[in-house]
Image (cartoon, rainbow, N blue to C red; front, side):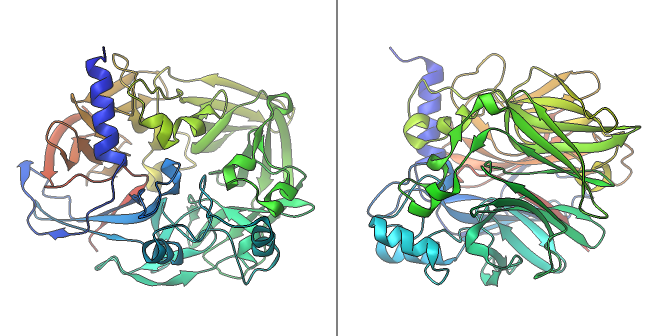
Length: 479
């Protein structure tokens, strides 16, 4: 007999993942509670929009055709709209009912010859241009970002495609992250260039076509989703989920399935001087896996780095749809892990700051990234009383004390919480959190607005339709 928790989890899968996004707009979305008078701007979130093509279901949460969701907040009122990311991969998928390009864990049906040809000749790329992970502004351009170097510029009013940007030359032999770091007029990002000798390279993507600022040769590049930055250093963190590039040449399996978990190799960390691109220090540690960096800063002769880490890479397997649709599915638990990297002794040590499950971590980035006085991290979580199924709560972690505070509502599955400070905020908890929630009780979704100090609800804007559970968003205040 299935438990109530199992039934709720299965309901979430059908409502929040196993569906295609309905595209529509709605003015004056019904609001419960009172939105703060000072909260005026645009909240845009990226993520999966289509997991079921006409002729097949995609394999993995990370495979979906992307969609943008926009909430315009003005004077306590909310307008909503959404649209698919109109990249070549999406156009081919709706035109043929199948994939033309390889996604994270799903391949199109091609002969081995075609797969080799696609990789060897850049004019016939096999990799997707589907930028379905995050959104940002680089200069004056509104960008949808993915792990493919082909990033999509969109119109912030209509959410329609303006064009495609290739900030790094030779894009189809690269993978990149969807999490650039910003420093004044610069937007730094990490790319992994595949070849007989592969490279981790740092570029300033705010200056398309520029040379790499740093280049680290590696034989077996790791799957890397993000990187760290302090005021004076970049930090490349590579867990032992690695690929032999020749495997990508023949492309017998989808991209991520060419990677192997090699715990015997441990994890590798490079600290790179931002001014000259040289390696300041290199560390080998016990194996771990992470998608997201949280924050990093300099403290005396040490680099202090907080990341959202796992003991192994099984979380990637957990995100296959065949696993998520199981009523008794369970996710690996990621926690906030702090590394202290001594630049003098070249030794590293780590500790877990909190036992809370966390993923999609966010901080008050604009004010506290690279700063030692940062204190709070926010993310999605599995509530301690209900750790079966998908992420069912939001968590606030005090990194100085290890204290955890949760928002939880029965039958609700909140997405990434985006922090925005209040006008007189003097700390990284004085503000609000924005999160799009899948509500299995009402079979719809709502935009949740929380008081970040208390983690209590201030208001919600209720949509008539469910929003497919997604990844990363940003709040852009009114000028």
